Structure formats: C-alpha cells, structure tokens
Image (cartoon, rainbow, N blue to C red; front, side, top):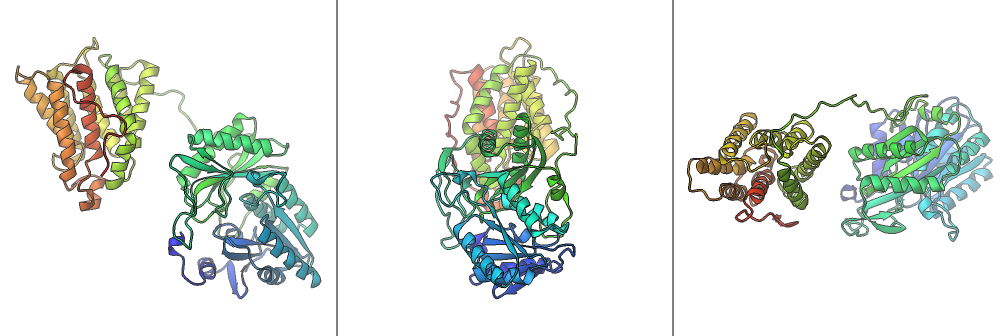
Amino acid sequence: MSHFLPENDAVLTAARGLALAHSGLIEVNSSPLYLRARDADPARTVALVSGGGSGHEPLHTGLLGRGGLDAVCPGEIFASPHNRQIYEASAAAAKSDGVLHIVKNYTGDVINFQIAAERLRHDGIPVATVLVDDDLATDSADSATGRRGTAATVVVEKLLGAAADRGATLEELADLGRRIVARSRSIAVAARAQTSPTTVSPAFALEQGTLDYGVGIHGERGTRTIARPAIGDLVRRMTDDLLDALPDGPDEVLALVNGLGATTELELNAIAVLLSDELTARGLRPVLVVPGTFTAALDMAGFSLTLTRLEDGWADLWTAPTRTPLVLPRPSLAPGEPASPVRTPASSPAPAQGKGGDRALLDRYALTVTQVRDNLTKLDQLVGDGDFGDNLAGGVRRAVKLADETGVDGTTALADAFLNDVGGTSGPLFGLLFQHLAAASPADGGAPSVTALAEVAAAGHAAIHRVGGAVPGDCTLVDALAPAAESLAAARNTTEAEAPLTDAAQAAIRGALATASLRPRRGRASYVGDHALGVPDPGALAVALLFMALADIHEPATAPRLPAPGHITVP
C-alpha cells in the first residue's frame, strides 16, 4: 500500500478520493483537514466526532454518515490529528446538545482531543469523551497509559451512531460508549510487519515460522514472538486470552475478526468460523460474527480478534440502518437459531471398494508428498498460482483418513479423495490416474503384475488426454506419465526386464526433469511464457514420485531413492 502513496499531501489526496467516491455522503475541509457527513439524521441532537492517524482505513472514515459519525479528523500516517483539526471539525458539526468525542487511547490522540474539548467548552459547546482502551496486550499495572485503543472502536462508533440517530442525549451516549468499551477486549497477531512509507521496506523483521503476538495498529511490535502454530490453535489461544480478560456478563457476544491490511477476506472468513466454534464450545452465543478489514495497520499481514459482551438492545443498534461508505455484515444468528449455519448431509456415500489391500503405496506416497510439499509449492509459485503442493498434500491426507476410517485399499482411497474432494486442475486429473491404478491392485495385496500396471497406466494416460488434451511436450504431468506408461508397455512384451517398475520410475523422472527445458503450452504455466523455462513442472514431478513409490515398495533393491525432505530443488 505504501509503495503507491503520493509524494505530497497523501492524506489529503486520499480524503478527496473518498469524497469523490461518495460525493453525496462526504465533504472535505482541506485547511485544517477534516471530513464531514453531508446528510446527518435530523433526529440527532449530538454530533459524533472521531479521528486518529491515517493508515487504519476504513476505520473512522468508513463510518462517516447516517448511523455513524458526523466528522472525522485524519492525522498523518500513524500520527494523531492536531487539536485545531478536532476543534474546527467539532465546531462545524456540533448540534443542539453538543459533541461527543470518540478517542482511541494513544497519548497524542488523547492530548489533542482534550485540548480541542477545552476550546469547545470555552466556546460554550457541550462536549464529552468516550476513551476506547480495548487492547489486552497492553493491560499492565506497570503502565500509566493503560490499554491501547484498537478495533473495538468500530463497535463503539457503530452502536453510538445508531443511538445518536434515535435522539440519545450527550450523557446517554457517553454512558453507553463507556459501557461498550468496558465490555470489549481485543488482541492482535502479525506474521509480517507493515511496509514503512519512508523506507518502503517492512518496519521490522520476523523469522520464518514465527508470529508477533500482541501487536499494535501502528505497527508496534508484539509483546512476544512465538512459534507459528496451526491457525486453529492460534485462534483457541487468542480466545482463551480474550475471555480471561473480558469482564463477566451476558452470554451473547459480538465477535469482530479484523484484518490488519494484508490479510485476505478468505482468511478472515475462515478465522471467523474458528472463533465462532470456540465461543460456542465455551457456552457463549456469538450473535454477531463480523469478519473484514476495519482497523488496518497499513499492509501488515495479521489480524485481531475483538469480543464485546452484548447488553439488551445492542444487537439492534448494530443492525440499525446506515448510510456510510463501509457496509457492515448483518447478524450471524437470529434469536433461537443454532450456532452453526452450515448444513451437513445426513450421510455420505460410501467409497467404491477396491480389489486389494495396497495400503503400502498410499503410506509411502503420503510420506514422500509430505516431505516435498513446500518445494512443490515453491515451484508452482514460479510458474502458476502456488497451490499445487498444498492441494496434493491435502488430497493425500484425505485419502489416508478415508482408508483409516473405511478400510478401503490405498489406491482406491486416493482415487476417491482426489476425484471427490480435491479442487483445482491437477487434483481431479490425478484422481483419474489413481482410479485406473486401483484396478491393478491384486486381491491378495501382493505386487501388481507388469501387464496390469501397463494396462492401467496406458488407460490413465488416455483418460487424462481425453479430458485435458495434453500430450508429451506440453509441459504437464503427461510428460512423466507417458514415458512411464511406455516403459511398462515395453516391459510387458519382453522377458528381459529385470526391474520393470524401476525402469518406469526412471523414465518418469527423466520426463519430469525434462519439462524444465520446455515452454509450457497448457495449464496455468502457459500464461507465464518464458518465465517457466528452467522450472520443472510440479505435476510431472508428483507423477514421478508416485512411480518411485511403486518401485520402492515392490523393487526396493533397484528403485530410485525417494527424496529426503527438501530434496526437490527450486531454481
């Protein structure tokens, strides 16, 4: 984000851009800089004014308008607004019952809003303040400044905006705001720092495989650096910390899942489900689950979780209509609705039964894929969309689970998992190959015959060609499968082949490695043209690994060695 900021007047230019996009809602005062809602609800008797450093958008400006704020004062990036901005914005927006300031608990913000409040009182304008201090990472008895104000500000501004439109007085709004803050806590984590607008580099470095726990929205380092856990474990830990710090109260909660700038909607939606499940398991009722980017830290890769215990009527305030640039999600639950909106089928179709017990191939292939997953992904990032390693490993994990739970043989489990559950392009194509391969498994669990393997390899190759049209030389998985199938066909017609599976594996390896010299003609790699030269096709490597696993099981004395972790090299 900070790579493309204007060199001069970046904040003013951005404010003008927001007003340009929402011309009926917002007007900009350039000196001093503040933004003002053009269409306030006539029932309001109190103006709501907030602001803070820029770089947190859509915080503050996104809630400017009916059902939200009357004026917003943006400071420079991560810097508090000047008291003159706040004073003049408040004076311009003030209504008959005065002005309520919503202030995040940062020293510069607090001081400048306090000075502006003193100036307003001197002018005879009633003013009150709600101080947002929700960040439990800075909840320390040793700190005189107290908890920082972070994403709970969104909850405060939305609920107070709805209450103000209902004609609430200054005292009522101030009391409501303080109760919301008291019932709210937040915690944030980051895997990568924000980009510094000055250096155009990450503001701090994190080692691979670590997270900063307890980061701030101005890019402050976390209170500690931890080894990166699985996302489910991380959400569970954050939930535990939030509930330990959250005051006792009603079981109904609002759960805000906030992106810090570079976290995708896909990730935030998934985290929202994990958080909802954690809360439900603890006997709480997440009436409002709200994923999205609401309080960014420029382009920090991370997220925060905010919990607010809801009093009677607060959910109605959240769902009250707004006319603001930011459209907030609706409630996740209606009264009496169960906590999970996901419908699951009463039963799943049983997998097709295979002919034999070739579990050894599944286990060997699963081990191999696990060892080289990251390298396959890195190769795919160079020539495609970067999902191949995870897709392949995920499909193999599903197959192992299916075989464990149902007793179906290994290759049939692979076929079912990849045909039914693995998306993308390569997943179903591998499913076709596994489906044909399953037909070669003998009922007694012994080694498949060369004739049977030659037939199923040829059939799998033909099926994949019919579906995708790929031929050898197109730089796809066919470049490994075709030579392996040809090698097996040749071995079937001769008595001289001493290690036909080893020969087929070697042919697949040569074919896979040769794709590095090909200019791709099919698949996503074809979109990158000459950038793919020098990079072997990940799908072809995965086919070679499959034939290597077959050889390793049935011809261990001659089989090519399976790769150690990380053995597949990335250019």
